[in-house]
Amino acid sequence: MDKVLVLGGGFAGVEAAIYLTKQDLDVTLVSNRDYFYIYPTSIWIPTGEATREDVSVPLDKLAMKHGFQLIIDPVLQFEAEAKKVTLESGRILEGYPYIVVALGQDKMQLKGLEHTLSICGKPEEATALYERLETLIQKKQGRIAMGFGGNPKDTSAVRGGPAFEVLFNVDTYLKKKGVRENFELTFFAPMEKPGQKMGEKALVMMDKMFKMTNIQKKVGTKITHFEEDGICFADGMKLESDLTMFISAGTGHHILKVSGLPLSDAGYVVTNEYNEIEGFDGIYAIGDSASLMGPEWRAKQGHVTEVMAQNVAYNIMNRIQNIDSKRSYMEHLNILCVMDTGNGAAFVYRSDKGGKMIPMPIVGHWMKKMWGWYCRYSKLGRIPRLPGM
Image 1 (tube, rainbow, N blue to C red):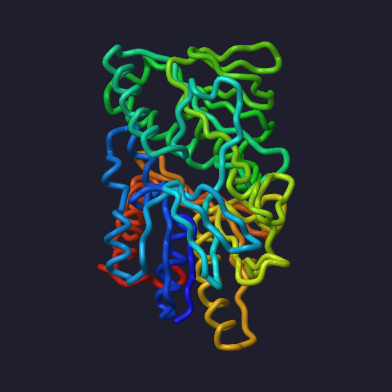
Image 2: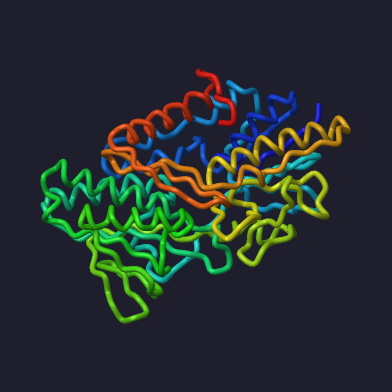
């Protein structure tokens, strides 16, 4: 039986391990933590609507259900040419003809970033956001600033959606608590038109949502650094804040920077549309580790990541069987999400034909809740996977 090593226990790695195992391959998954974290539903942790346990799935349960081997041990070094992986414990993994790199990405570092919390960072930060928000609510007043940054070397490395979601969820939560009028909520970002990837129509609707919820904006100015009590900008302005949430843009994973693999200017692994890497036979890169091909508006999203993972399983098995057929992720390249607001949502879609945002009051919130339930239990094999999901 052919052996496959999957590096990473996030959306990309877990999906790859599941689908590779379906091909009757000998699969080993290596992860730095013992649970699969459902980031899209972690947006409700800061408002107490969910806990970390609610949005986590133990990896040993997934391994047992699907039949892959599991190693919980962070990757310390990856030597691509030798197909050699050294783990933090000192354990060395060799002899795998196929390796799927799904290590995710690192975050761009700004001065004073330690004064912020991120919904897209370590899971512990989401819980810290909840605790900090509850402290302010007990005081019945506060200044809250939430935003995201960009990577000028790669426009796909931006995580804007979760910032909008947490911001609108906090607005809804403060209203439920009856203290919204005592809080200043501000959205900030360095680009002129944050959220432009969603299309012009979506931008117009976002502006309407900001005005309806009395959320202020500070956009179009470079962020110089963060301080304990605020955000400082290149124009000399300081946005004072008692609680700052900031989603830093992504950059290449530090392990991959010294792996010998070909990298983009932003540090992501350069692949073709089949997630193969030129000059490195049997090694594939998927998800946030891979440099995403496509138009300027492209974005690293979970559904594209899972398509990559499923395609790689298909492509590896066909290669083993000497079948000349491969699947590309390019036809699935779009922006697709349900942007939750706590009391509703908006359906967002973007393709080469343009973008749209459709309001979904009340029902949209429960649709996203149902997606989280579906994600968890379909991966555990307790309910069937829907076609294309």
